[in-house]
Amino acid sequence: ENPNALFGIVQGGMHEHLRDESLAGLAALELTGYAIGGLSVGEPKPEMLR
Image 1: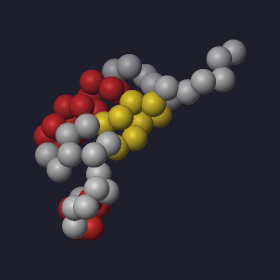
Image 2: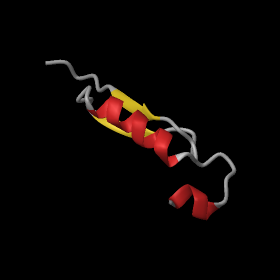
Image 3: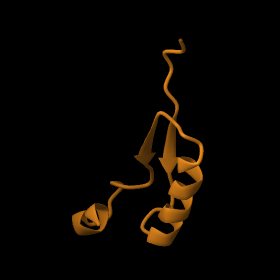
């Protein structure tokens, strides 16, 4: 059994429609897990949490 894990990184920054598109493509790959990229790099906290 392979002990490695492959995670997809959801891209799109603060643009919700781009994040949705990125996630849809990654979800089709059935990866081990997913993470959100491009956040927590200086934007206001309310923007990061939406």
